[in-house]
Amino acid sequence: MSSNMSMKLVFHKESKKVLYAEARKDVVDFLFYILTVPVATITRIFSNNKKDMGGCLFNLYKSFENLNSDYIQEDHKIKEDILYPKTSFSVQERLLLPGTRHADHEVRVILYGCPDCLRNYYVDDYYSDSTCHNCKCKLNNPEVKKVRLAKSVESGPGLVKDLVTYFVMDDLEIKPMSTVSSFSLLNKFNVKDVGDIQEIVVVLGKNEAFKIFEASIKGKGKEMLTSIYIDKLVKQEEEK
Image (cartoon, rainbow, N blue to C red; front, side):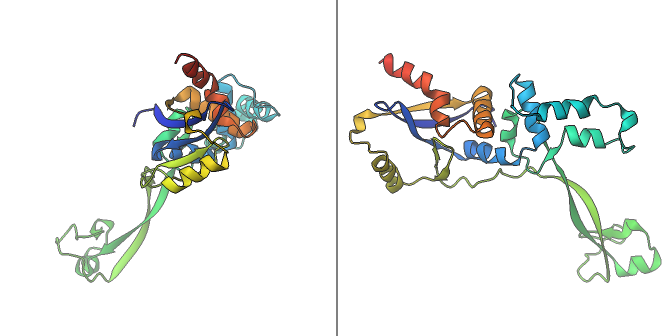
């Protein structure tokens, strides 16, 4: 998947505001993914982008990063796990926010044992999920089974289904889109002349992704999309 995604902004020229955006699954996956980013990762992302989060989280992060290993518990993974925590989901859109890591999940795998082989050769080689490795019989009626834990990287198809286009409101409220709801929104925003509406497809690349991420974390009002894209929208209107 490309690191550059796109969405269509519906811009009200008179008020100079983005009313809403029309976005597909990839954009919505990224926006919801923001909810899964750990605090330490948020701090590092802001630092990598040379942005001040406000507050003292950066000082806390750097203090632990600079702490000599003599003062840290002997488990060698503690420092890495705190500074580089793994996220719960592995959607590809996380690539827009460098420094995030997905988790390896332990899954329960049930293995079955061939009764005959296990009676004569009770070794792990004769456990299988389908066929006995020794006699090649199908394990239709196994008498013995055991459970082991295996590492499995969750790399599923993202977070939402690719069934519809989604509305992304200026304040990042998200809901499925329909023709009826489009008209309802225009009425809600008191748009009386459709000639005042401008539609423009914009790229959601790494710069825009960070701006949305920053605005959602720092709470910059309810006009996030407008604040990020207003210059581009106004410039395009003036060039007409």
